[in-house]
Picture 1 (tube, rainbow, N blue to C red):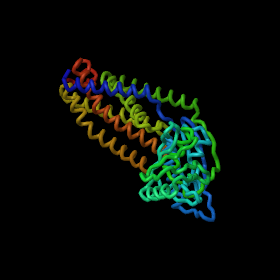
Picture 2: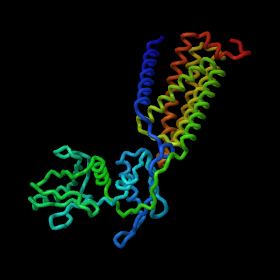
Picture 3: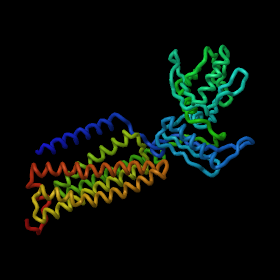
Picture 4: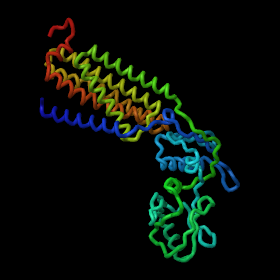
Length: 403
């Protein structure tokens, strides 16, 4: 075995082992159609002081998106419905009240002086993080903007020894007494918070306040769209399809087909591990993208093997036929995969929700299929040809063709 082949084989073994550990230790995220979650419909409320416009609704959607992302929800669906409504789907979230408390509050923070006058608002904040106070209790650490730092320093200097209430949406969160001037631009909101309440408050403050009040028109928990029985059937169908592919490759290409099947197994492991590490969410369109990429991986091997046969018929040695087959098939494989990859990029950029899930899995599958077809399959075929060239030659031999 050549030294370079030995090194490549060791690297491949390490990659597969790491991918296997990732799949074993880290669960994969499932989308709303496979996992279920919370479905919310919210409507903007127009009032005497609030006029709805396209810009206002876009800002509201942006704030909701930041809040949902702060909750750590994977692959949420947030989209407009008509002029006033927003649909939010949160996979894996089942607590309706917690969802509403986080995404539906106006979240207008006010820090007032003892006279009840508002001195600072949430607009003066640039960051809010979950933290703990000096007693280890959950709290929210806030950082003010440059202008907010000046206002807060002046407030805490003028009103030493007096209480300055912190108000969220008209309700007093905490009413601390100023012990001394705070000039560093950082503070801490403490209270009788649970860890979840402090986390949600940090998300609300960091995402900013909604520019318009939002009313919940509909909220419900939804189960998986497909249902467990349909998921099981889809899984069985996928397994049967892959087995049929394996049998066809083995029957038609013999030893090279066996090597391609091994490379295809490695491909599946790598793609699923990459999706898990990237915290990508598997949805029904995502499964479709994955299956499509499996087909492209098989197509690449077919192109390579047919080229190898042609080179072997032309009288080349087995190693030379393998090298020429890969070199001549590379252009076609590269062009086909790059055009599909560009399409996936466009879908990801302009799509949302499940469409992005399809684009992600398709992109990962394409990249992994190129790696396994060009690198893994070539390595395995070369090792098999070196170990038993006569068997390999019989696999490439064609009846009626004299060698």
